[in-house]
Image (cartoon, rainbow, N blue to C red; front, side, top):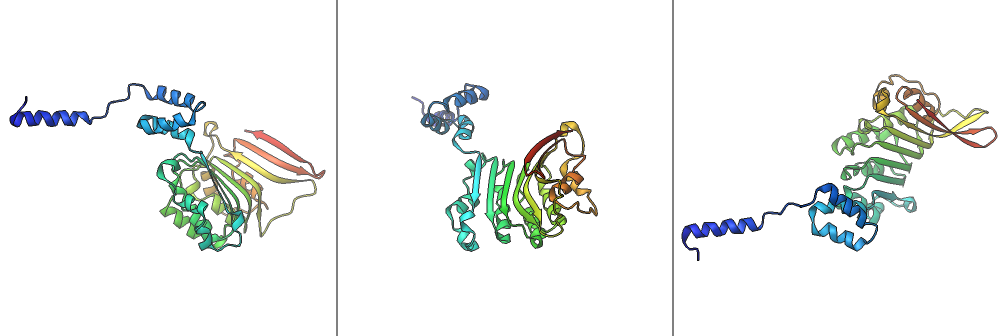
Length: 277
């Protein structure tokens, strides 16, 4: 029996040693491999793995949490901003649990017709630190709020997006469009997809021979050339070529390593072409 001061000290040491975490006997690579195999067989087991051991949790959550998030407000076109802010999907978007939000890598945002709401939504992107792909569909970007949007994003900078997909969006003119895609907050973008993007002012009609419907441009740094952000920053007093797709091809010419175009010829048929640098 241990007594006295010395015995008390030994007891404390033993108590402290009992709470020291035991290191995982398996390397993380093997744990990840096991988790990947388990996901095909039993979701319940996968959930249990995420609870039992911290080293298993990250890999398990990759299979339990969807890597994409959708904010579709198509049924709220006539609703007020206050009403939209109370919608369950909007609340889930602006206040996501930290742990699942970190696994979201792609996001779709569609049908937002109020400029102030657009700015609010863009400022919530920072809650998703690993977001890399953003699709904006039928979203209203007012020319007048571009400066306030940029300042707002300075306070809440979005994660480094690699891909930006724009669909069914009308910008006022080329300066409005280029100011948006050329924001410093989009400096890491290497893939830009455009489908049915137009100008409300200064848009030139398609020629009688063909019309560019949509395009995708990609920059691969392995092939050299300036980044998209660098090319856009050096545009100076650029004179618009008449459409968003033409402007992007003109300005990013030296940066583009892969170009996909969907061209509608006078026959009415849609032909897709793919060009590499």
